[in-house]
Length: 371
Image (tube, rainbow, N blue to C red; front, side, top):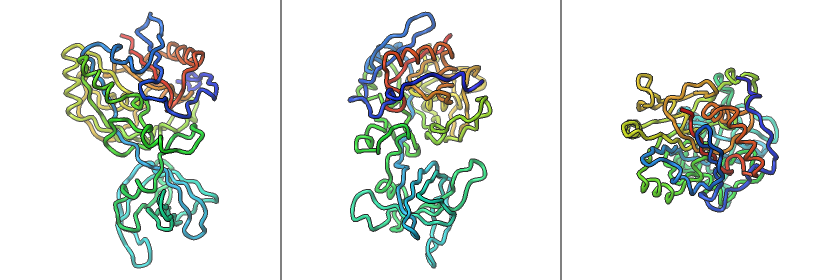
């Protein structure tokens, strides 16, 4: 489908620069089944909008402090690196006579001057004297399959890379938030149920959910289950083709555990809908759809490049809580595929006129798939 079919006009001032004062206080545009008018609510009212017995599925990925600011060892020039995903380990001579195992990552990078392969970059700790390097990075080359930088990462002190990253990395808030990440982002750009580290962006619909909200869902007879999809570069990647089908989706790793497959089985048995918190949860569930039993999933783990656009044959998800997405994006295409292009874009125009807040720290929508 043509990408310009997913365009809408958004005043820049509606792009949320900070989260709502409280997670549940974000506004909620409820788009009921076809024939009913949208209603303007708060996320705190979500439990009353779901049928009793509904299954709510969340994405429990955890955002890593993937933004690294450092200096070239030889010239002192500034370098910024965004870690995208680990790809393994290898032996590397990090200094003459010092050969050790290093982690290899795919990444994005920019510098005050051009980046040259073989360059070593020192990443200092965010706090403290700043003379010691928490992490060292070497630019190895460029990947043939996705064009990303391939870099070696290690800690000079020998501590695990993940631990060192926590002392020197920064929250990778999206580029349309025109400020530096601050202390509030450490908490608010993370879901309350985040468990498995690996994402470079938050599953933003889940940012509205609190533990109290989950308890209220369960008290109404709703079941809560989880999947893991590590949100990757694809969430920021602009669509640069006219036909969305030609857009190359970056791979994202995901896991749908047996417990969630069993929860979906129980929901189908009691005739309850499966409600997905966010587009990332949706992609994980649909990637694991059971080809032999519509509405069910099989336990799965691997990588997905699933691109969902209008015409997609939905198999698992019945309801969707999601934020408002960028124009001409794969995320907006997914939402349009779920509830209908005209209906979704009409709802977006309504949200603009009602001054809803957009994107990662913005407000939310609750949609239902037409029967």
